[in-house]
Structures are given as structure tokens and as C-alpha cells.
Image (tube, rainbow over all chains, first blue to last red; front, side, top):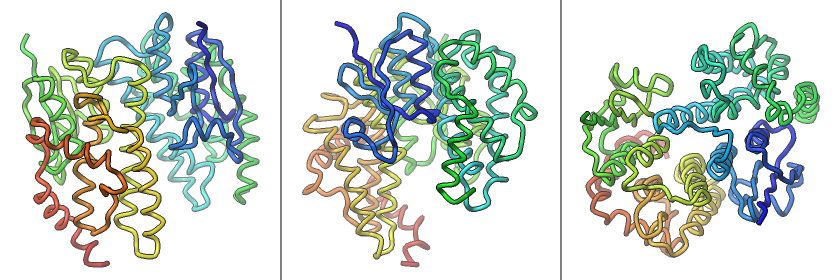
Length: 219
Length: 222
């Protein structure tokens, strides 16, 4: 029986893009359904009643929520190619730790740069750069966070890269100046079809953010 | 080579550290517990968890692992004779989802409900009960979240087993009642009665006293 895979997502979401990257890495066919977050579909509300958020993966009718939990599920079920997590338990723990670090820090700190109404842009920028530098340090001289191969932590972070232009624009800084190795890593990842076909266009993201800021009265 | 397992944890009231103690005891692994004074963290802890500077940290043959849920996964994979996570990928995803839900949502909305001022409390309690209901529905009538035996999600839910009961007494706000959450309340009884859990879980009365002292300024201002 063929697998039925549906992804409920929202095009600017870096969390939704993570799932797209993982599905592409595994060469999986799926149905993509765009959600309007101001008018969430009955399907989304039914499939993720707890958080009512995207992304949600529906595999043969069964829903999974939370982007990195979905990515890990994809990696476990379709383990025939492109493993995202390493096999060694300690390496796996380290990968989970850094993906968790991205989850805990980057989005919320980044929000201060783009959406703040309380003059938090400078603090946000400073903290954001600190986070990226830490991640850059973790990358070291490896081509990917997964070492020689694109992996779990790469998936968790690379989708933020299409938002870099927006963070830079509103924070008035250059990520390439601050973290050149990290930017080189994003370019390396974008050479992969699974990444380039899954990430949104940075200029479209910027237009989206600009539109949201106007609606929020920030711009 | 003999295994060296050390657990850097908080004092007896620190529930995240208790999670790891329970999991290690369930595997039967010998380990050394090193108690950290969270007001005066040791250089070793700060070295092993330089990013978050928190407990618990598991040290296995000199290699540190931080973040309690990540440590539980590591224990599951390293000592696989007594797995704490389900084997089926979908069930594993669900266990991970609900553990994160407890840590990232349930505890915070419940804390809001416990500490809200009177005028905001009704709404906060309603929200906390909504979230508890979700967990109640997930448990259904299973003996444990893990099925017949204590598993990853039960261990993660130690917060529900211990913290709620304590907060209820200290703050005099009822959230986790038998009337509203019969499955969860029954689970709490079974969970705290498990021999290994009993060994690790702090006594409720001792916790209540401890939390009362910790929150004395907050309680006095109400």
C-alpha cells in the first residue's frame, strides 16, 4: 500500500520548511496544503488540537506535530536513505541538543529584531549574533553540523537562513560579517536540491515581514 | 572497560534530576550522584553544560549529555535491555510530543493558574484545565503512559505526579482534582507507588514545606 503523506504548513514558516527538507532528503512524495494562519482549517484544528500550529505531518491519516519531532519520525520511518541522525547514541544526543538549542533560542530572539514594539531590537541583535557565533563554533571546520553529511542539526538551522536577509535588514547588521563560516555553510546547504527546493525566497520573506509589520503598526 | 556513569543533579526537590535518577535505576546501571548547589554551581558542571549551565547532566565515560529529555533518550539507546521509549516510530513521536507539551506548555499555564491574582485566576484555571484535559485524554485508561510499565512519558510526567499536588497545597488552588481528571489522578497514585519512583521522589510534605519557604515573599504579598 502506498504511503499517504500530507503536510499542513505555512510558506514563510522556517519550522514548516524543516519538514519539507526532511521529506525531500528522503525522496518522498506528499501533498502540501497551505494553511491560512488567520483562518485555520478544520483539518489543522483536528490534527493538532493541542497547539493548533503548523507544521503537521499526516501519515496514513495519523498526525504528528512539532517540527523536529516530525523530522525525527521521518528519519526513523524512512531509514532507507539519507540518515539525518547519526547511529552513535552520544552523537545523537549532541545532535538533539543543538537542534533543541536552535528551537529554544533562535526564533524567540529573532522575533525581538523584527517584531519588537518595545525597543528590543538592539538586545535582540546582540543575542542573535551570540547564538549564531556559538552555532558557528559548533560547526567548526566540518562541511555540515552532521559532519561529512547533511544531518539533523543542519535541517533545524538551515531554514532560518532564508530569514537572514530580513533579520539583517531590520537589525541593521550583516550576518556574513559576523559569522562568515556559517554563511558559507548556508550556501553549501543551498547547493542541495532538498534545501533549495524547500526554502522560501529571502526577498519574498522580507516582503512578508514588511507586510506583517505594517499590520502590527511597527512600520 | 568498566563503565563510569555520573549524574550531576539538583538537591532532592529538583524534579528534572529525579527523572534521570529514576531512568538510571530502571536500567540497573550503577551510577554516582553528585549533588550540585544550584546557588553555587561547580566548575565541573559549568564546564560540562557550558551552554545552559543547568542540571541534570549525565556524564558517561567522561562524555557529558545535558537536557533531561535528551538524557532519557540517550539512556534508552545506550542501555537497550530495558527500553523506556516505545519501539513503534509513531508511538515514539507521540511520547516525545507529550513530554515536550508537559515541559513547554502544561507547567507554565499551570504555574500561571496557581499564582494569578484573583481577578485573572478564573481564566488562568480554565486554560490550565484545558491542557490537563488533553493529557488526561492521552492517558485514557492505560495504567501508565508507557502502557503496562513506566516509560519515558511517565518519567517526564513526574512534574504532574509531584509538583501539582505540592502547588495545590501551597497556593490553595485546585487544578488536578479526581472529579475532573480521574485517569491522571489514578496514574499519580500508581506512579508514586512504584518502588523505584518511591525511592527517588521527594516526600510531599517535605516538598510542601520547602516550596512554602521558597515562595514566602510571594505568598506574603498576596
